[in-house]
Every structure is written in C-alpha cells, then in structure tokens.
Amino acid sequence: MPELPEVETIAKGLAEVLCNKVITKVDFLSTKLREEIPIKAVKKVLEGHKIKSIFRRAKYIIIQTPKGLIFSHLGMTGKFLNLKELSAKEKHTHLILTYKKQKTTLAAIHYVDPRRFGRMTAISSFAWEKHPWFVQNGCEPLEEKNLGTYLSQKASTKSLAIKSFLMDSKVLVGVGNIYACEALFAAKIHPETPAKALTTSKWQDLAYAIKKILKKAIKEGGTSIRDFRKLENQKGYFKQSLFVYGREKEPCLKCKKTVKRLIQAGRSSFFCPSCQKQKEENL
DNA sequence: CGTGCTGTTGCTAG
DNA sequence: ACTAGCAACAGCAC
Image (cartoon, rainbow, N blue to C red):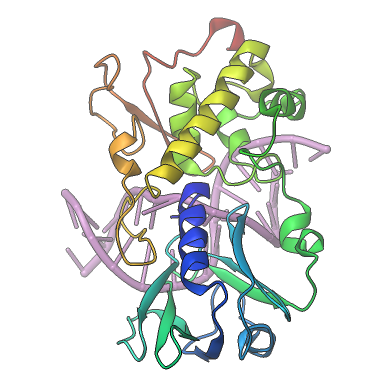
C-alpha cells in the first residue's frame, strides 16, 4: 500500500509524536512478518530509551535512539496507529510501543499489518547506509538534482518497459505502482515504451512529473485506496488527484477517452491510450 | 461459495 | 546479465 508519500507521511507523524519521548516498553503479539522480527534487538534499541529522530529512506521508516536504529517497512498493509495506553488491539496488531506522553501519562503506538508483508529489524550501529536493506537502493527522487539525466543513463541499455523500470528500487526508490502510473500519465509516456527509447526531453518531462506528483502527494498526506491510514487513523487525500490509477473504463480527465488497464510484470498499469501514445519509432 | 483483485519486494527460473 | 513470474498473506468486491 504505501509508497514514498505514504511512508513520508507516517514517518513525519511518528516524529511529531515520539521525538524526545521515552519508550517504556515494547510488547510483541506476533513476530512473524515477512521475516521474523528480532525481539531482543528491537527491545534493546527502544526500551527505556529516548527517541532521537524518525525519518524516511526509500520506503522504510527509520527510528533512531542512542542505542541504535529501527528499520520498519509497511509492506502492503502495515500501519502505525497512535492510541491511548491499553487501547484494544486490532486483529492483526503485531507490536505495541508504549511511550511516556507526559510526566504521568502513557500512550501507545500499535503496528498493525494484516497481510504481514511488512518487515522490521534493529541494528546497534548508526550506519543505515551499509545495511543490506539499503545498499542496493537507487537514488531518492526528491533529492537527486539531475533526476532526468540520472534515469536516462541508467536506462540506456534497458529494453524493459518504462513502467517497470521506474518501479525498480535499484534505480529509483519510493516510486511504486500508483505513482509510476501517474507520473507516466503526467509526462504523456506510454507505460510499455522501452526504457532506453525515451528521448532526452521525455526524460526531463518524466523527472519533473515524478517530483511534482510525489511532492503534491506528500502535501495531501498520501493516497488512501483502501488500507492506508495516517497515524491518527485519518485517510490521505491524494486519491482525489489521481488521473489514471484505478480508473479503468472511466473517462480520461484530460481528453475524455477511456482509461485502459494492462498487466506489466504482474502489476496493473493504468493509462490513457490517447494522451499516452506509443511512438511508432519505439515499436 | 469461489474467483480475481490489491499500495511490496526478493527469490527463482528461463 | 536481464527480465517475467511467483510467493509470502488477508480481505474485499463481484
């Protein structure tokens, strides 16, 4: 469910709530996500320690204390909820972080993840860049100044579809199915165009579109299709701004032609066949 | 009831 | 080396 804007929204929300607060305890109700959560290591980093910072890298949330770092990935359906102490747990609550809200009051952050595609781990160093979850990652779309040039160089030998190329985290992190579809629509590029076939000027359009859409989505608190919720359980509002994602058979919001869906690498791609024409020289 | 979707990503096989 | 396909899982729409 969560792509860069959703993860950014959660990380910011957690930072507001938890920074400079002490985690009094960590309770595990289930430790089986994609991989087993290392209970001891997580407790060691969090329990009894003050949160120094919380931020996003790729689609991961990173939580820092004086003892080390926690990495959390939400998978498809993971969410953090800010609740009162001893709040009822949901069916798929995996862990509960209790923290000191004020001098005498406690509150709790619940991690809930029905599909269990999320992952979580802890390390005792601060070198997150060297961790296996990060070493292979490509660039951060909002931090790379020459994104168009960077992408065109990476794509120069790749015949795979531009849509799949954009979703390859070794190239670019944070862009998943929704934002790949939306960025290609905004840049008027057909999702099946071979990555190496884009012109320099199309790469610039695409890079601009990616940044613009991600920034707008962050501003609107992410996209809630079904599961995604912010920390206080509210929805994100970017769904209202989607042009093609999830709109198969509906009229294109720019030209009124019918939005189409196709499957690429096992994922649905939505596009407008009129606004996103496949160039003949690329076929 | 089944069937086919779903925002991720890492492994496997060709 | 590249790339498509699948598996991990629960829930929902039809």
